[in-house]
Length: 269
Figure 1: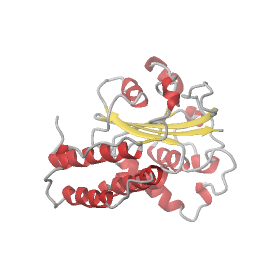
Figure 2 (figure 1 turned 90 degrees about the vertical axis):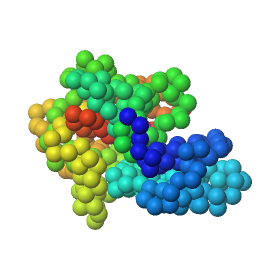
Figure 3 (figure 1 turned 60 degrees about the horizontal axis):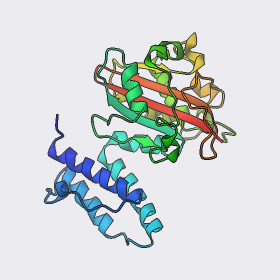
């Protein structure tokens, strides 16, 4: 199914800005010419005006300013994007949603981890390793996920509120966290953003985690444990690439009839 014209324009501009941010100088897509100025078109025109005002030289400064513009553009696109960026853009995380196409949704999760599908709604994906050369060696980097048949051995069901807490602690650092979510003055705001992200999947969504604390309790207290105190079945590669060693992770998977959402935090040094 093709995207409506306004969503197509937003997707085209997002892709264009991302390419400029990566250092690829491309002409403006034809699909953005003549777009109306109301609705989503107004946001497109705002972003294009901002883009035209950014000097192209020096190139590194241009790329940084385009990156900032892209973040603001994505935040303005929808509340879900804004919540994702506020909550997890500053942490080493992976956030992506893909379509549900199989009865065994593990296959759909693998497609998301391998970056072979796009968000069905065109919403933001957070992926620190999108252009990482480590993916030349490990295509799903930083993941080295098990086959779908082994997912039941590594994942445990979670209740909805525990899923919110698991997502919230992904804002923490894996080592020497100075301000755990449980004691932050903005604790309620962090939890509210986490709920906004999971509300996307509706009240009938199922949640799964690789956290071993959920093996015997579908409602572990992630806030009390904190990210550093959370053990898991690793979905990470053991390869040492580009000077980075991956040692811990926490994953959360949301499953509906139509979508699978993947949220992952990585500990590395």
